[in-house]
Length: 222
Image 1 (tube, rainbow, N blue to C red):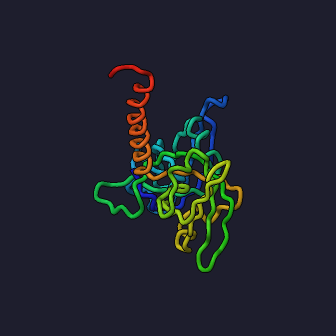
Image 2 (image 1 turned 135 degrees about the horizontal axis):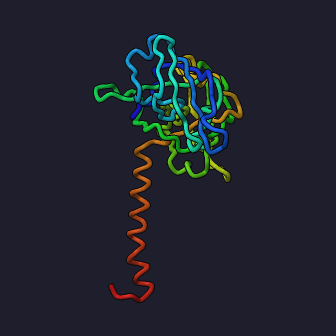
Image 3 (image 1 turned 135 degrees about the vertical axis):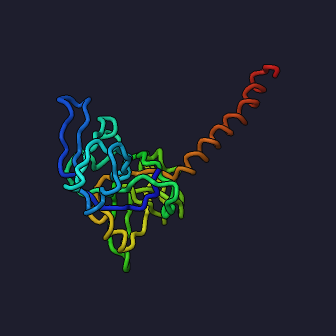
């Protein structure tokens, strides 16, 4: 589990194929800030741009580690297939502060940046999300963008999806990789975990409520 509070800015320095076909994933080598890996061990979980990955090799003195990412994960995420800056967050400890919101590190969909522009002292980030995620997005609700816990300021339902607007303060831009985004950038999105369960419970309740009506209309005696 994670909180969406970025603990370090890293960089993918190499992305090497693990096989000759598209069915194979890649081994990513990542560089970290000084001392970032001091409390990290092999097998630990680190969220990379919001996707939970496992440390496969570790070179603490060189400030690098590697992960193996499957073809399935590459297909369902953005920004993890080539060198570039990434957000890093170590897994949550039981006694840590929950500074953001509950984040699983499971990417629910890939969105596209439609606007990143300064508004006053802050910046407005607008993202077009997949249509299937629209029902989980609400004003003042939480969303994870490339691993960063953020608050939704506006939601606009569109024929082909849903666009959200987010306010980014200077601290967020300076301490995460979100500052490198531009119009057209693809980003990893994770919806609020609580919203996911609420939607599931409500859909099951709707099915349960519809069942007696279906039996009655068929003329079958219960």
